[in-house]
Length: 332
Image 1 (cartoon, rainbow, N blue to C red):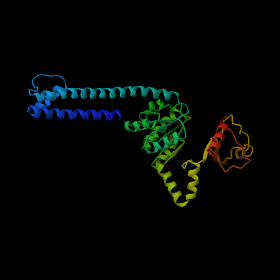
Image 2 (tube, rainbow, N blue to C red):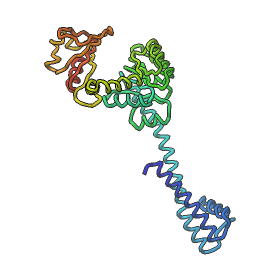
Image 3 (cartoon, one colour):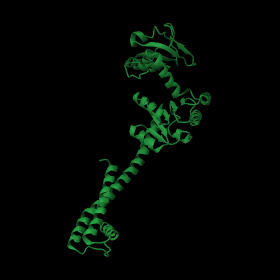
Image 4 (cartoon, rainbow, N blue to C red):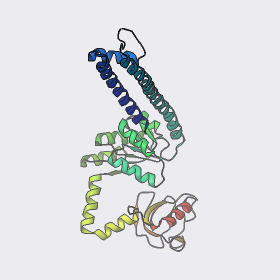
């Protein structure tokens, strides 16, 4: 039985004993209900004023049983309440300290502002990928769900500079603002960009007019869930095979084949080599469908003679294990 359920059960038992005691005194001693209830209270409270006490043998035997079981039940209920109160306070204090310690050690993590429907999906995907992230939300019930899910969190309003600082925005790699209103998302983007110029920021928007404002405020990407959802549904209706391919390569169907963006680090062995010379097909069995260059230019379907440069982001398709091996090689 859970602690809260134990407390509820104890209170229910205590109420039943009060009812039982009141009815018992009323029947056995003939006292009115008010006096019977009063006598039950002073009996269980071990006060014993002496103004009401059983005169019959049956009433005295009944009082003995009431004292034996009732006082014990009251003590048990009080102990449970205090235990839950102390445990809750202790857990809250220790938990807050543990969270702050965990957050202070995090580097290159992601911050998810808002744990609504979109935020929950983002957190699930990040968790499945094994990527470190922190949730920021100010709703007590929502924070309880975040805690139950086992995610690291900061309780507070994401539009507050101090809350983002507490979430380690200065050390973070990226931030996604998935708050319900465009105004809040705009403020989060402005604040995050001010606190960390190198932060990669993704923001949600609903109103078309907000898209331009969010980009001007410093968001690297802005996404409308309704637009994305509508495009997917249209694709499913008109080009279902293409949608199957997209879902397979993006990992939605959790198959071995997937699409991944791989960053070419400064120490990578592939720098200066062409795609043909890099051994991508021979050693890793990967297909490069596009290259997102550091300048922002996108090269689609690069030829075999394309020379890989430092800072390139290679959009590759292949088996997950091979993608992981190549990604590690690019960082070495």
